[in-house]
Length: 104
Figure 1: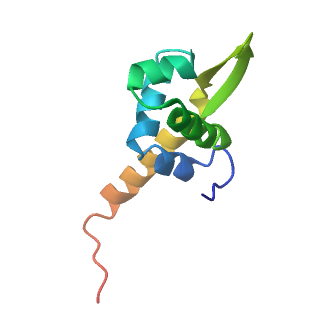
Figure 2: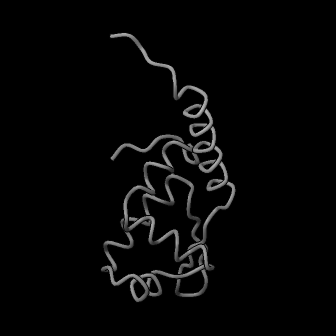
């Protein structure tokens, strides 16, 4: 999988289209969690969770914080704000051009 520059808003939106990644982000919005918490909360396998976390970390959505034997993951709110702003811009453009039709 090719991933663009970390924190790229359009890439973040694309990554969150995956239901498992969206569920991970939803759980992490409630606060930092380790892989064992995510496995318990989501019912996914540990390797599946780890693979999704790797992709989310690479995109800058999630940050890892070692804590003893465990690694806790938390969201980067600035990256999510940028993705939300990107969607808002797209919505505004769609509103402004909804009546414009290109000729065939």
